[in-house]
Length: 315
Image (cartoon, rainbow, N blue to C red; front, side, top):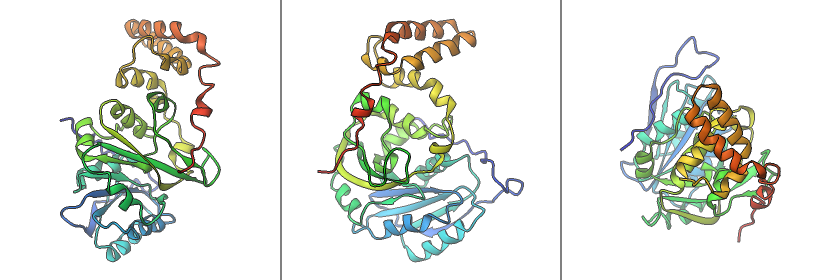
């Protein structure tokens, strides 16, 4: 079994000269079906609607695990207040290495066999989401996912429904939002959770690792309202972007003739040039050969991406 990443060096903070010691509190049942992990850091202005959307669920066999990254605003006080109101909320606060470090901590703290990750500025679509999803958490799939509604997001206008049943090509073009996914706990433990080398796109990396190896089930319902303006909208992830094609090759077990490379010709070029500069001729030659085979598709390989990802409407 591959352990979850445990990198714990604190992310840079305004008050990093005074490290925040570990604090924790709250209560939750010893057993539940779903563990909801909510990573936070300085989220005082958004967290209350998120937690209240959870408290309104008609399905109650779940716990809330809030993992705070050492907030310096009023987030921890708000978490303590909400923990006093909700009998199924546990929390911990300490400096960490970012949102995915917090999510990995949440997996280790969780008590349920199913994991769901909700951003502190996101909220569930309605009060029956868990009731509808729970019917499908019956052991016939390892990854159950639906759609999200965009709010204040660069991907589309407010109210746009993002999501569909993903094909292999789909997952190479755009990610499934983690706000729409319920993961079986044993799958996260087996495949190692979120890779902290990728501070922005560790969720995409995880989904690529799982996509061909686990049983998936798509539900045509909107799970959550996904608010834009987070890290992915402001910060690049150069390590993930550079090695993206390499990740696809490994995790999707692509043959050299795979037409999926036609969407990735520019990435192939950057990758073989990178390995050539690093003095790794074997890898440079491997990706140069792939690029040479598929480079003629540059300029038209991505033509279908917009069509593939046109917003879907719920049935």
